[in-house]
Length: 316
Image (cartoon, rainbow, N blue to C red; front, side):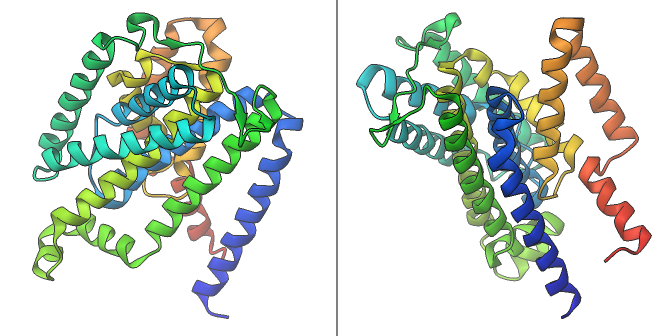
């Protein structure tokens, strides 16, 4: 067995262990907290696909999370669609919005790309705020969870958790397969040296656009699921602060790693839950300090530093 096969086998074992832990988790921890971690973990993983593997820094990813959440909520609450169709509709809406954003932004790079995505996301924020039916400042409230496939009562928190866990596993698997496919290798080539990728004959803009749409769609999947969990879509979901938060989650966990975004999301959500009642608005300051420390002290993030430590210790 060569080194690559050995690593793949260990990774599959790790996936299996984490899957079993995920199945058992709602019997040991508060399901709503776990569902929030999974939703933001999927959101951060979607963002990491774009920044960590293509090198595109989007400051507007909250637009996809929030748009999908609002569309999902309105489809379920106002038109009576089932939860699975509501989630699908929200995901498709985020994908379409991602295509529009991508067509407008991918011809630019660096800070210009980031600023274009931020500007477009702010436009979405003001549209959501003013469009009738979204609830304005109050958000879209009273979204019923309903019955999955007509017979699984999602008002049961454990049943709802397993739906969220299944969605997370699907989204995570899609990201993993994308990264470890020929398309993923092209994404990495673009990240490392875009002019060289162009000289090799690749249509760089096309691959960037595809990656952007995949990332936006998975972020939308997370947003639609989050709305169903909390039965609410709010302006916070489309605010630039949420776009900044997902950057922090990704960098803290480990940019360009498989499990980093999930670890980062779990860390931030846990800190927010634990500190909100104790320090109030100072949570934002603490998040800022963590971000600075992450950038200055451990740039590879939690998972990245652990991987580097394992490599230095010679563990195969």
